[in-house]
Length: 137
Image 1 (cartoon, helix red, strand yellow):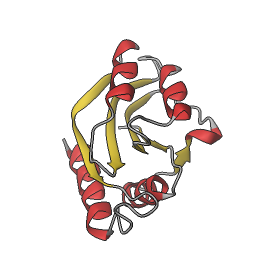
Image 2 (image 1 turned 90 degrees about the vertical axis):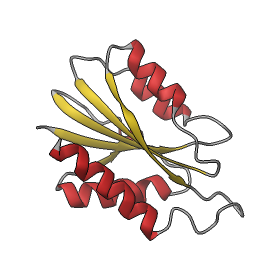
Image 3 (image 1 turned 45 degrees about the vertical axis):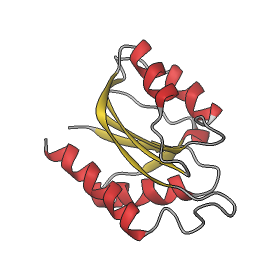
Image 4 (image 1 turned 180 degrees about the vertical axis):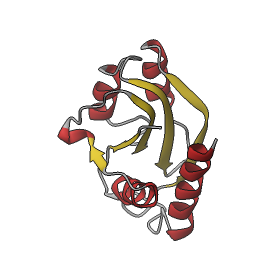
């Protein structure tokens, strides 16, 4: 199974999570800022936060450019101060015919003085376990 992982980050939290998952799975994480080329991907992990109630505009633009010929399935890993799912990204991928797994790993994310110590080690390890479980299925 060809697996890829991309992330969008403003605070560095998503990069930490993506790096931990990628390290465990033996793959290289890519920032959406690099405009990575995704082709023939069976499972794409997208790691990002929610900022001001929505996803990163860069990530939205990137996901809108993906097609079902490039990516079969997507798993979302999201951190946010309010622990909310990635609805905008999920909808954009679905419009392009890409299957988005129902389960999404959600964890607390810190921003400025809110939830400053998050995501913590346990939450990052939770993301790794989530990713490993999907690979085994």
